[in-house]
Image 1 (cartoon, rainbow, N blue to C red):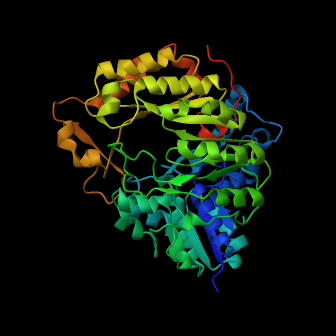
Image 2 (image 1 turned 60 degrees about the vertical axis):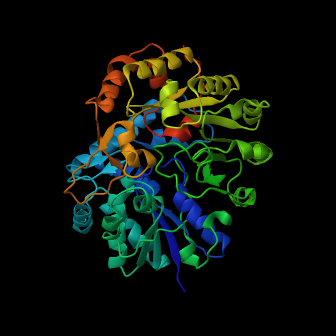
Image 3 (image 1 turned 30 degrees about the vertical axis):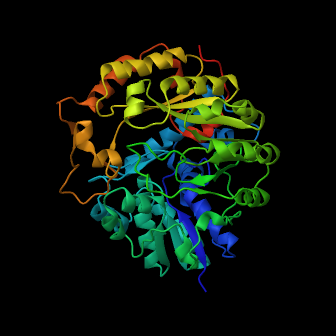
Length: 500
């Protein structure tokens, strides 16, 4: 009989359990299969900050970690938070000097060589000289006798270097390895390079986990609290549990969404009830939906109010949120923050790309969220095909009108997905898709593009952000209050201070 382990490789920010690994292990637990979660990202950072740093003469990380994980730190002070994260980053900076060419942070890892070249990754893995190698050898020595089938859960490209290495080490030790997760599924469905990924591992699965147990029903139809290999605290003052109310998207019409074909499904509330029954008391629930479904959230509020110490997630800023005092009810039930994809202050841009709301509606939703007492984390997107200086100025004007209402901000420059409706209809939108490093064997989700009229909206957007947007008095305090590290989870747990 197989003894399973669910393995999440570095690097994922260690503020909460990785969603993919949690859902996989929870689905197996609900089917009577014990598969402990080994979060090697949390393990690596704990080893580096608490064990290796003192012996290597790096800065003392203990006070910083104590501040981040202390239950007494109910809400983080922004200045203190910035300081303690700076200590952790200084240790990472000193540590990576031993690994020339590597980029390493609390959120990412990038190896030297061609970005995400599978040949380079395999060579690095076998060298045993990566930033993770020493920790992996210690972990393998302690745990290799506890399982004989490792299920490696991959969600981000930042995990890939370590995943290749840990898979190679496990197989060298005679342990069977299966690799899956949202990264593999996305490369297969909407990216480029799934054959290259499969070349890194002996077995890659592209389903949601059901093939492991040999059933046809969606794997997330049944979940409960899983087993953890170690009873370690994450770097957060409260336990944060990821959970989806749905799969797919309630809107599913945006022209540049790469997941338009992902099936929509409502996740039974009984799953969350089972998870809350088996997990820690009074957790924060991170709703990991593509967009929180307005039609079901109100039905969940009594459960959130009774069994959790808060929740947060991503919302499309559509008019439904303004009805029947819903946002006030959410605040009363513990909603700490809503992440809203306002994207642009230009109605022309939002209409052109089928966003399904207007700038005026987004502005009203963001204002109401703030007035209701929640934190606002607003996403803005620049550099879309056809975007003009006027469109960008309209976005800045919207932010100026919202002065004091936005707590945190994410500024992005548009990347054209490898596969989406916009890519298929590129000529209609005046662009010509190109290729990145067309001769290189790399994994990719995006493509460069040229505008037929000769304009370069991405370059223009970067210049606007740097020279006009960021220096604006309405924007400066928001960017200053937005943590660089430990993004969404810690933002929801940050003190809400007035922005002048």
